[in-house]
Every structure is written in structure tokens, then in C-alpha cells.
Amino acid sequence: MTRRWSSGARPGRPAAAAPGEDSNGTNGEYCSGTDTEQAVNVGLLVNELTTNAIKYAFDEGATGTIEVTVAALGDGTLLLFVDDDVKGLPADFDPSTASSLGVRLITSISRQLGGDPKWERLSQGTRFALEFPLASGP
Image 1 (cartoon, one colour):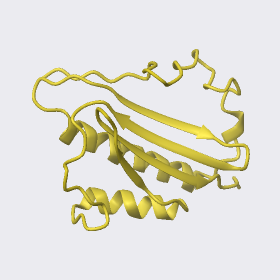
Image 2 (image 1 turned 135 degrees about the vertical axis):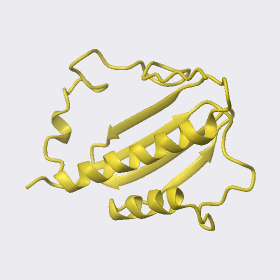
Image 3 (image 1 turned 45 degrees about the vertical axis):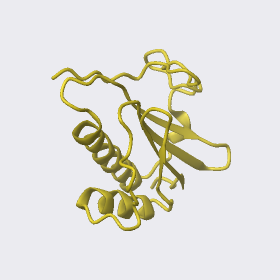
Image 4 (image 1 turned 90 degrees about the vertical axis):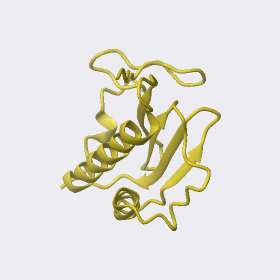
């Protein structure tokens, strides 16, 4: 089975930043006040989302991209996107009625972060989006 993961540019998306620099050129300074609990929850969320994409989006022998993007808005809000460009969500996917542990975990962590999780079908693949407030560090 061959799988490819990339942080490179896709049509309509900016290219990855140079080593040591984030995409807005701030070297991560805008997140320097992130509190540890929030950072751990974001990490757990990204882990669950990428694991689900690897497990369910890639058929045997399929290749594609999983892209994780975190963007800071000027108002103290963070945007998290996890996109894949593989087969997309099943037609009957409804996160509000899903009984799987993974979807319940993603929903729970998203709400702990102060956001409302959204899954979107793309022309090719899936996008998970979450907008949530940046927590202040200790």
C-alpha cells in the first residue's frame, strides 16, 4: 500500500513555509501564549482526524494528501483545517447521529476548545474545519 502525506501547496492553497518560519512569517510568535491544555487538545484532535483519514479515506493502493493547517485570525481566533483529497465522506455521513467513538471524540474535543466542528465534502476529498478562541497561556 502506498500513501503520500504532504504539507506542500495545492491549488488555491499557499505553499508551505520555509523551515523555521510559519506561513505568515511570524515564526510562531502569535501562538506563544497558547496554554498547554489547549495545545494538547489540538494535538489530540489532529491525531484523531489524520488517523481517521488514513484509515477510511485511502483505499488499498490509493495515494493522496492530508493537509493540516492552523491559521490565526487577528481577533484572537484560530482556524484549524484538516483536508484530504481522496475519496471523501460517505453520502450518509451525519456527525450529529454518528455513533463511532472517533466522531464523538472529535466533537467532544472541538467543543472543549470552544468551537463547533464542521465536516465538508470537497469536490475531491473532505475538509474538517474548526474555529475556536486562542487560550491565554499561564
